[in-house]
Length: 91
Image 1 (cartoon, rainbow, N blue to C red):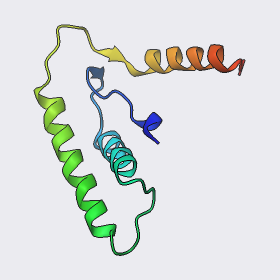
Image 2: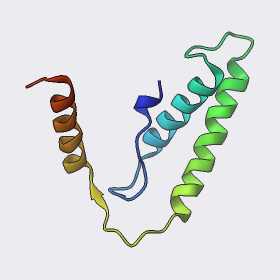
Image 3: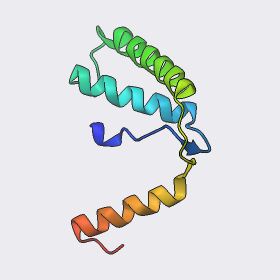
């Protein structure tokens, strides 16, 4: 599950609300051990995702770095190359 949580800090353009929400959702899924909560737990699950996304947005706003922002496309290409090397895929 957590493989889908990606670094969100120091990218140009900055992380979108959708990316922050997706990371929060993956985190709550991992912590709760459930990808789909029961009806009894849905409200608590949704509230946790909302609160974590809110905290992550504040964290990203406050983090500072001297490194230049990373380009999303360049980083994605590097990740694909690492994956191809690791798993022996060529396409």
